[in-house]
Image 1 (cartoon, helix red, strand yellow):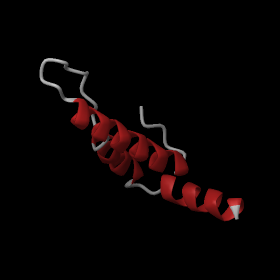
Image 2 (cartoon, one colour):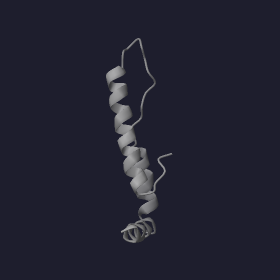
Image 3 (tube, rainbow, N blue to C red):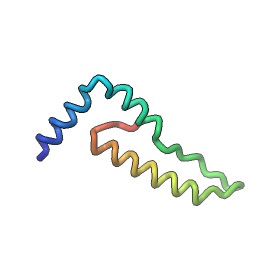
Length: 67
């Protein structure tokens, strides 16, 4: 199965549109703001942190570094 995944990833990553797609994809990564105790953004902070971790997990499946 890994061979099919590798073949697929090679195919996708060599597509001419891939660099543009990758740039767009990375621009959609959720941004986690710094903790603000004065505004108590705890719930938003936790939500965006979980969203970012899920986003990064998805990228890792495709061997894409989110940074």
